[in-house]
Image (tube, rainbow, N blue to C red):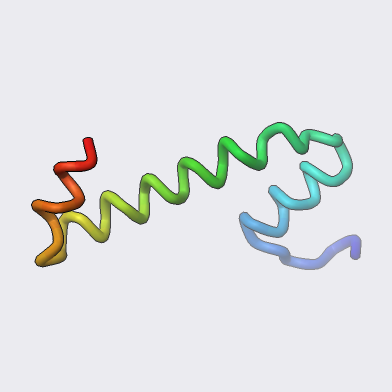
Length: 54
């Protein structure tokens, strides 16, 4: 797959697969989930309920 344009997610996946950095997976998943929660909480009618979780 040399010379193909993978994008950021593809590059990160290749890095984790080649370098055996599987311990990064839960960290990345949690960062993405918190980011989604923040974005969803800012523009939703459910904002008061989401903010009460913290």
